[in-house]
Amino acid sequence: MEKKVRVRFAPSPTGGLHLGGVRTALFNYLFAKKHNGTFILRVEDTDQTRFVSGAEEYIVSCLAWCGINPDESPQLGGEFGPYRQSERKPTYRQYAEQLIADGFAYYAFDTPEELDLKRKEIPNFLYGQASRMGMRNSLSLPDAEVAALLKNNTPHVVRIKMPEDEQVSFVDMIRGLVSFDTNLVDDKVLLKADGMPTYHLAVVADDRAMQISHIFRGEEWLPSAPIHILLWKYLGWAEEMPKWAHLPLILKPDGNGKLSKRDGDRLGFPVYAQNWTDPKTGDLTPGFKELGFMPEAFINLLGMLGWNDGTDQEIFSLAELIDKFSLERISKAGAKFDFEKAKWYNHEWIKNATAARLLEEVKILFAGQGLVLNDDAYVSTVIDLVKDRCNLLTDFITQSGYFFASPAAYDVAAVKNKWSEEKAAFFSSYLEALTEGLSAPEMEEQFKSMAAAQNLKPGELMLPFRIMLVGGKFGPGVFDIAYALGTEETKNRITAALVAFNN
Image 1 (cartoon, helix red, strand yellow):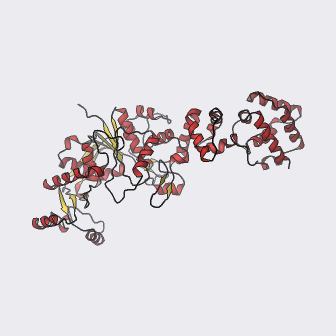
Image 2: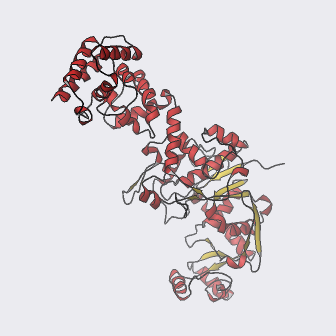
Image 3: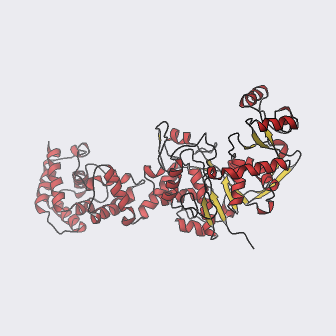
């Protein structure tokens, strides 16, 4: 009987959530939903020195915004809890002691100062096969001294004892057969002096306890694979070991190295899902959400970083990603991040969204500008008029602000050179002729007929009319704008603009 699919996203609560982390969560989620499995959020908070208050809540908020909702989590609970590693602390010591008793691990009493000295003496120092017998540990010290050190609660860690001259191999679901020479792997710490496990021990113990079936994680974790595989074997759980998939890196736009927060700062785009404020420094790191990305677009672009369905299709809903997702289509090579392409995805999602989908987001944006919009029908009309012009949700402020407030200034310079008494007279007469109840096409027909009657070219009147209504040279069709504003407001704006144009 095939194992039930259970996958986990296991971030550390140390700060903002990088888009690479969200993609890892997404691929876990897609695989789980594709196979009617379970998607778990597990918080790996055993490194208390790097723990940041509020980071767990931030991670939960990011996943909720993206629509990547866990089936089990610290907040939801489940049959395989607790879902924070710090709450599982008592369970790890027993596994460390079991490994020592079976000869697969040992106590190490070296002080941080002694280790620093070794690193200064020996370039690229590795605590392992070549050096372990020259260090202070239970392999090099007499049994009586080890017993005395333990009895006196001397600070110590537990290290895995890497075997000599072995090949550790496994089949990666993306990369195929991967092998490691154990002579090149150091004796990693499994249990720290504070009794907390390191990632290596905790991740294996937790994956087994939670019956994880498949592990999706970033390519940067590949070097840890031999340690984890040996731990599954040494703890007697080899038959239960999950299948592995190491996802390709998300690269800088030039393809040279992994995309980092510093790259985003340097190049002017976010790499975090949502705004993150460091509680210690108060520094704000921008996020995709606050910049104006729709979550659907954010998920879509992440899904296409290192995966495609083999066709030219680029726009996918979350449901479509689940339906199409397959491991065979995940690339081994890193995927370059292109912010212009990211904005293209967002533009496509905004353009194709209904006004109902965008309504609340647009109202919230304007509320942030101090403008409360109460007429949902009118706001929806405006959204439909301008959404094609928006790459970001925040563009609605600049692209539609004039629908809700008269222009504070006019681009007079754009019309001044060609402005004339005849044109001023036209707009004065147009004010008199403009009546209620005309549709946008009827308004246009009236406008052009009056221009012809006064021997004026309609094309030369359109730009002044636009600037009268909008304040500048932008916006959708000018008669669509006038129709949406209504006759009275259109007249008011023409009147106000004529004063500015004629001065």
